[in-house]
Amino acid sequence: MSRKFALSLIVAAFAVGAVVAQQDELLQPTMEPTGGWAASTASIGTAGGWSATTVAAGVAQKPLAGKPATITGEVVDLSCYLQLGKHGAAHAPCGSKCIAAGEAIGILTKTGQLYMAMAEEHDARRDGKTTFRKVAADNFAKVITVTGTTTTVNGVKTIYVQGYATS
Image (cartoon, rainbow, N blue to C red):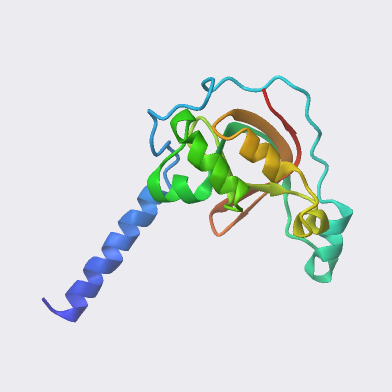
């Protein structure tokens, strides 16, 4: 097989993988969140744009443009979900440990949209003075509602959480 043909096959396989990865669907639809997909009914904060610490931390004090949003979904750890497709009640013991140990937090919607989730305030988040990581670990595999500011950079969806409600 020629190098050019082999390289073409590799590029084609990567392109197919990229298209499949962009589909919005649950990777393991049989793995249900604790309590099912019922949304939380508790009150939550409102998204009001970036906090003062985020604006101050931005390059030239201009963070990326974001959109206020409210998202309801299952708390997942991105490492196990993106590598293994794991989520849901059966994965809770592992996933809550992963989040508590510092793995990235995700919010997985019922339709398969996946958001990286982190506390919004830059300085407090950087200095470990936010509570969202503990809330996420304590509510792993449960459906929560978060309010905040969303960004999408090179296809990566993120919500910077300003308020949350758990069931």
